[in-house]
Amino acid sequence: MLLLVNDSAYRAAALLVATYARLGLRHVCLTPGSRSAVLSLAFAEHPDITDWIHHDERSSSFFALGLAKAARSPVAVVTTSGTAAAELFPAAVESRFGAVPLLLLTADRPPELRGIGAPQTIDQVGMFGSAVRMSIDEMLAEMSLDEVTKLAVTTWSEAGRRPAGPVHLNLGFREPFVPTEFSVPDVQVLPQPVTPRPIDSESIRSAAAMLSGKKVLVAAGPVDEPGFAEAVTRLADNAGWPIMADPLSQLRAGVHDRSHVISAGDALFRTVRIPEEPKVVLRFGAPLTSKAFTTWLSDHPHTPQLVVDEVAGRDPSRTAKMMITADPVAFAAALSVEPAAADWVQAWTSADRNAGDAMARAPFPSEPAVVQIMAERIPAYSNLYVASSMPIRDVDLFFPSIDRPVRFMANRGANGIDGLLSSAMGAAAAGTQTFVLTGDLSALHDMSALATAARFSLPVTIVVVNNDGGGIFSFLPLSKLPRHFERVFSTPHGLSLVPIAEALSLRAVQVDRHDQFVKALSEPGPSLIEVVTDRAQNVRIHEEALSKI
Image (cartoon, rainbow, N blue to C red; front, side):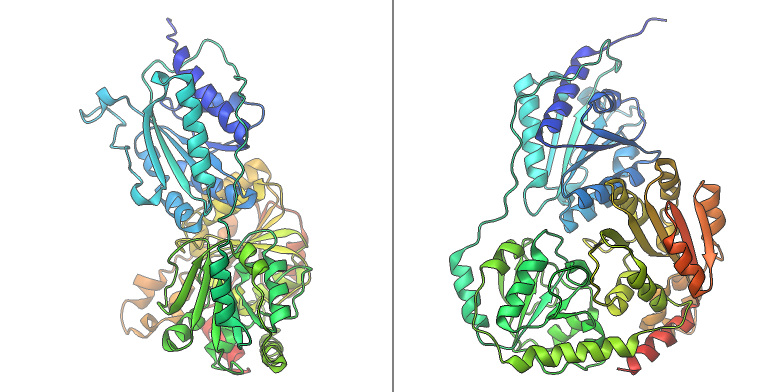
């Protein structure tokens, strides 16, 4: 049989990959395909890049998302043409709104085969629209060596530029796809440093004038940057301010000063038990998980709000008086103000302790108890990857301040449940023990990730709270509908996750006692722990906990 070869396409792909490696790329997620063969082979050959092979493109892209989030560096994803490329769209959206750096490389037919009904050919040019910050369509083999190098440098820099995001390269290839020899080119480009946006001195002066001597409530939203905990707690200590800390702010767990950290803020706003209304709200980062706090902001437009965020325009309550686009770490470190009255922070920390004590020790099995036990048992320097919908709200409400460093992670850019398990697998692939807290629907949405955990022997423990459907809907007005609620919204499935996980070669156990859960958490992963709860009872337990405040 005659074996047709195409060395020019492979040489260009190898140069592209080698340039990415020189710039700092260390991980790529690959799925099988012939049109993407030269890209996959070039990545597989490079000694400095770890390739993670997946069976479906959607899971691959979310794995890359979690890995990029954990590593705080771009990760590449390679797909073949057609609907395979379209599978990257949900992860691209989360990457865009979650400020996670991704390089999306989709192989495509050459221009002469587009639009004429060629198989596995769709319109891939600009297919991700505004979900990506840059989209480029090229025939890689027809580019000069300098152009390929420049393409790599430009797209790498754009993906990592803060706030980070996804970049799309749509690369057309003509047959044949098999090279005669493999090589790793020597590339001389220098790594590109990623620097935060510089701090404007006038913004610092304006903020100081707005905040000095005032009773300020610091609202620390999702900020996953080294140094933020130290910078914002030092500011709060000097100014005498309490910090309402979203779990994704990384302030609730660690060895930093937590004396000003309020972990029961959501409960205080839900029950209207805040000790005194703040005169100013200073928010760092993305909006907080707490709907009660966002509702309070909307209901109190007279309370000035200053937002410091690298991503411009995030103000869902539409109450911000001043919005400063800046690095929260540098801004908190640079801000200096006159302190507030001493009793201001004391009133909040006292209310926080009372609320935390009142809600402690929920009965097991229940969703609040799962969160509280995980807070007691999760090892230092591990990840806790939390699903959107109900789990992140339970963590916000019931996870107390602890002295062990734990990195909280979630896909809260677009707040979807898709790809949660795959994202957590990616975070674990970075080399850190990872615990996952998810509901049954998020888990069922991403079952193939369980096989990934087993196949790669990842250090991950998946805790699934199985309430047989969408538990969050039981807290909404929809639950009062006389018809259709259970079938259309709660969507019960009647499944246990244990046999599904075991069928995918993952060790799994269902627990219904406190001691069983504690034991299962202590065992090394990869594993799945299923805790069966009741949706109606869960609502009552939440109501009882809040009523004690």
